[in-house]
Structures are given as structure tokens and as C-alpha cells.
Amino acid sequence: MKNLLFALLLIGTVQPVPAQTRTAKPVYVIVHGAWGGSWAFREVDSILTARGCNVYRPSLTGQGERVHLASPEVGLGTHIKDVVNEILFENLHNVVLVGHSYGGMVITGVADSIPERVKQLIYVDALLPRDGESLKTALGRTAEQLAKNAKDGFIIPAWVKPGQPLPKDVPQSLKTFTEPVHLKNKAADKIPATYILTVAKGTDPAADDFASQAERARQRKWPVLQLEADHNPQWSAVNAFSEMLFKIGNP
Image (tube, rainbow, N blue to C red; front, side, top):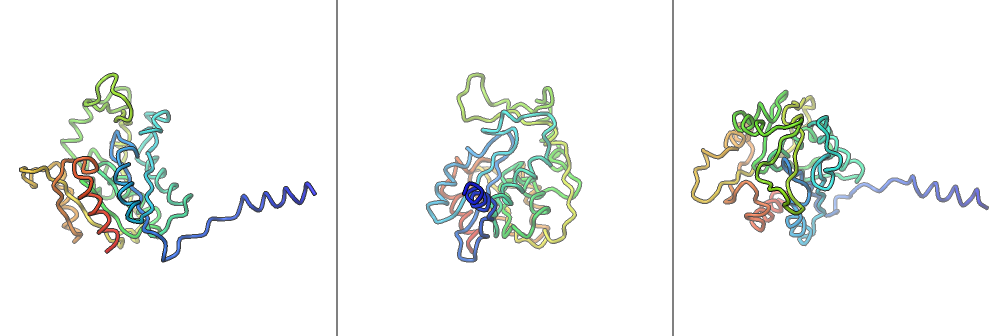
């Protein structure tokens, strides 16, 4: 009797979760930017969920609630694997993969790794790297300025004040800024993609820190949309931003 019970329990633990069907809810995987965490997109998650979407917000290793795993050895490859595994272990298909800022580096590597799982890419004021580029080489002078805040293998967010309560931005390993992405899968080039350039009211889009990345998107014949917001639309224009994400992911 005990052997039979054990066998039934074992069978119950190894049954795979059925893959999503075509009628499943839209699936968004949102990858946060440098120093941040999944907490930054909580309100976007709520809005999209209310619209009938399934939203996943992985925190990258060493960031957000995973800050206890921080190490100078954590690199871009680690963060790419974080998101790849989120998609694979949650058995997600037809994913609308969103990357904000540094998250653009990550989703580029994810799409190259598992293009068959990704339906749409959305870059939000994000890095759009070429093969062999790191954040430092893709962003240039701005990244060099950030690197000046490096200490003991981490780049410190200077805007975070001592004693500031959680949630808050946390130091991020320098290696995530210097490790290049390697792109080998031509199938990833066929994934539909959209670039959202956020531009603060009254400023020149051409002078934006991410204008050069938006231009890369234009060169690839991607739609480039402009959103009136600062670099963090998940706070400064959350309703308009969420609506834009919904419309792109549900044409």
C-alpha cells in the first residue's frame, strides 16, 4: 500500500504543465532596468492584469528582493539566464517580452536564446545592442560616466540616500555593464519588435540619451513610438505607458 501511494505521489510531481493554447491570456514578461527590481513595475502589472493579461516580472540576480545574491561575478549572461529560465520553467509561449533601459540588453539575449517562445519584443527607452556589444560600448559616454561610481565591483546608484526605506535601487555589478552579448540565432531577427522612446515634456527627442538606440530601431525598420514621460514611464506616465504596452502586444 505504501509503495502504491509513493508511486502515485511521484507521478503527480513529474507531470508537465500543459503549454499555453492560442486562446490563453496575453503573456507579458517585463524586465526591469539597472539597479531596479520587479517592484518598479508593480502598478503596470496591476493595470495589464486588469485588462486580462498574465504578467511576469522577474527580478534579476542581485537586484530587488534578490539583492542578497549580489556578487561582482554576476554578469549580463546571468541576467539573460534568469529570464530564459523564468519563461521555460513557467512554460510560457507567445511572450510579449518587454525590456526597460538596461533590460534591453537582457531581452536581446533572451530572444536570441529562445526565439520560439517570444511573440513580440518591446524596448522601452532601452539599449538595443549589436552582436558583441556591452552596455558600456552601446551607450558610450553616458555609460562611462556611470562607471565612475563603481566601487568593489559594483556601480552605486548615487541618487539613493543612506537610510532610504525599501523598495529602492541597489548597487549592480560592474560586470553586467561590461560583459558583451553574443548573438547567433538568426530566428531572433524575425521577431516583431517595437521601440518606445520616452521624452520629457519640452525637451528635444534628438537630445535624449536613448535617441541613438531609437535610431538603431528605425534602421531595422521597426516602429518607433514616442511617449511623453521621463526615463521611468512606469511611474511618470503609468496609465499611458500601460495602454501602449497593451496595444502593442494585442494588435
